[in-house]
Image 1 (cartoon, rainbow, N blue to C red):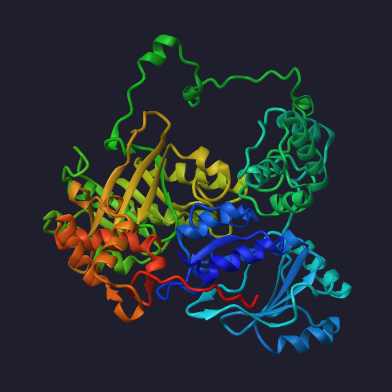
Image 2 (cartoon, rainbow, N blue to C red):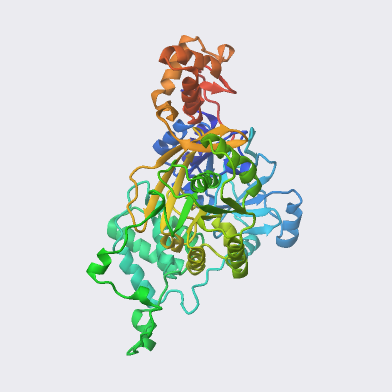
Length: 624
């Protein structure tokens, strides 16, 4: 089968020694910024490679994937100019930019390529002028965004000049001031005890296997940065690890990866940088603490084995989902139905229906900082219609999120709840980011402060607090922000949503005081009334795409005589043939075909929405 232009382009770039990785295929229904993002579950430019087999596997999955690279991987930087008048401003401040290999982007802007690299997050040289190099990436020709291609308009790849020194100097200044990389107060960078700890930690690391080396290296660099070690010291420890384990790491990129790990991390830099215990506790040596005379601190009394055996089992607000009088977090990527799920739980409790098992009906307060009107006027009525619930419910919406940094706002909300004589069983905070305004969720200290604030709210209202939050940058990274957040919540619940099939899986990732289920709760969104509502999946909801293969569709096209563009057929005609061939009803056939189409497996048969068996043709060279 003929390779797509994107596939051919990826192979051509790799033949030049440029590591590439796939990003989203062009889709008119998607935001252009989203189309430039790495694929879900990938590691972005850390996955970039020149390996032909890997590249073929990627683009055979979807021939229309766009092509991207990190300029720093080949010793380059890209000046990204988003407005024409910026040329004059740059040359007035820094001097003339030499002519170079220049790519016009789909929006009509310019990517100017130069030799040399710039630090991660180098920042802007001028308004609407960015630098792409270490820790960043650009799309390459022949990528396409909303039908418009990336194309070379000047210069050649083999004659790229060095970036002028005055520009490089300005980029370094921008980078040095772009992010605060200071260690915690009282902790110095590269303390001997921290270096010793880092080397001891590295002795526990196994070697990395092919395909995971860059990603594993980054994670280890970030772990060492927790100790307030400099990129130079980190590189030395990583090199020792490479040699000890026989890991074939990329030494040329190691400095870039170490610098990026010190800047672009979920935890605050130096979060685990602590002095030796004998130094920390020197002032407490020999101190005798007097125990209080009253029972104010009885919770800290050590329990005997018999006393511990008498502790009560956890009780549930919703069986196996939300423990009573606990703090829980529901997390997922943006727009992955967190609010739909939280609303389902809230209305289940407010109505007392047995959808999730036996629940005790009670008041629910939902702090809906994001879209309170849509929740009240659309989503709640749809839920009530789906579940046959009539009449008012003890479900209350707070329109503004109190900030954790403003205790008077939090107590103001508590006072209103008490003034209205509510006794909530559940309070939902939607979302954590709205509550943590002016706080850094990547700081262990400030994340700990947020957890303590949520705990205090739980104690004041004597109820369960459910917080909605987002995931980290990559799939499987857990909660976004400091690891102190994950450690602080009693319960963690994660969503994996598939909008193609309108389904979501709800996983109980942890309960501190109870076992978690081995399987998720599978739910499906159903359109009813003004919005959607969630119900549990039935066997009929399971997509049948695993029963339909691209070769099945190819066979249908051959039997229909769709041998060229003139005889191309629509997807409706294919679905009608599948109904006869598979014996499915039309709804199931349509669902299976559309699911296979969305996977990209049919891209080789499709041109502008019509399908045919492509005839072999000669390959034209790409103007890259």
